[in-house]
Image 1 (cartoon, rainbow, N blue to C red):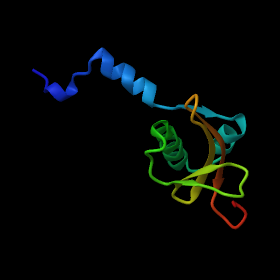
Image 2: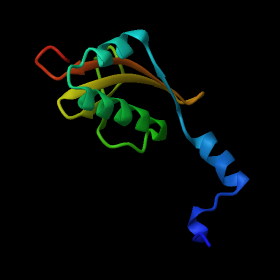
Image 3: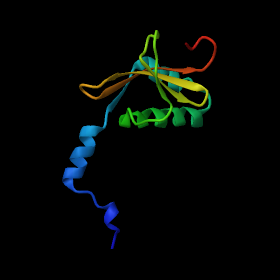
Length: 104
């Protein structure tokens, strides 16, 4: 018999779906992600960005001021820039860049 913690009820699943954000990737961001030489690193960046579905309860996220994009996610030496529309719960990944003096 499975422990009770593994059972989910239909109401719990509906609640989880309502809370989570949808992640959308721009063509530009996906192209930048594909250009990363280290494929394990690219996969890690992708997985961290997908964790933004729980935004704003995410580590490594900072609200930016005076920047083209309002938020950034830090993944090691890489930055994922994104926008968040809280009314319809969509996170739009705009760019993936390696951190250097020209990133900000």
